Length: 382
Image 1 (cartoon, rainbow, N blue to C red):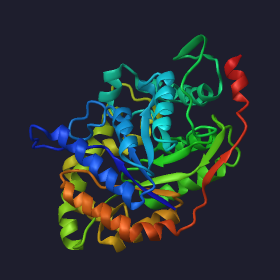
Image 2 (cartoon, rainbow, N blue to C red; image 1 turned 180 degrees about the vertical axis):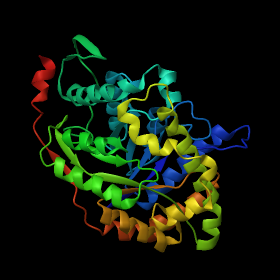
Image 3 (cartoon, rainbow, N blue to C red; image 1 turned 120 degrees about the horizontal axis):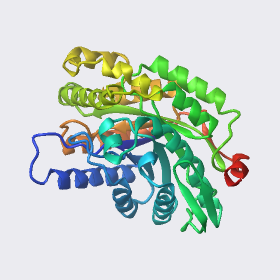
């Protein structure tokens, strides 16, 4: 089993005058430490306009810096919001990151879950999924076809052009999609994509059902690329320390802040004047009053193993639950709320030294296999 880190790059109020500068360099220090300790991967989101919740609006720039300050950790673009990015630019940027990292890049894709971001880029909710689908099918073709051309509903590339450079990973970097709703698990399986579970507040038995459906459906995929990435990644919000009780005192309010803010942001989509059917799975979040997310909700998360907060043994116990649920990879989410940088660094140290060896010993069901390009290529060119 693999283990890594995932970042929103958060900075909550009250802010100092240099808070944006500081949170980026603290994140870099944490990633450099994780690289030295043998973590498998690090992932950063793409978010825009979300004060406090995420300052990671240009992950491709930050990750380019990460490629030069690390040696072995894989670098996850988790995720590129495809409806906001021209697929040609995505293909080019990922290829350059792959070259500059010596073949360590993983491409995560997604479609956006907040109205501020959709409105800011002028993309209506009903267009996000078809835009994602069109782009995720085109990008692998751009890496293998030269010259390349397409005529889509949202993007057209003609006359034929050379999209350069190409990635150095062959046939191409692993491709993933962020999955929250059961439908997205199915879409991922049908396209041969790995699943990045962003299932805030979803209990593990329900996640297990979605993973089981994914494993069944991916047995007969029509892959968009030349690989079938049959892997499931799950996030673990946590904090690990030397004193379990003190660690919990530090992490509790930070975890509740993150959950309140997360529910508040995703609920904006369901509160729109016209709700697209594909976002109705967020209705549960829209019914939450942030004021109701109190200590009782924290206890719900603890009892349901939705967080790993305490000593190294707790990290191992919860990670084992995720392994049993069907995960091939766990991503520890440690930088949230107002948790101090030094506590995150210590958490990374403890996980690296006392948790990773155990996690790495567990066998998983998933993996990546190479395949011939899908028949849909011919249809796309017709």
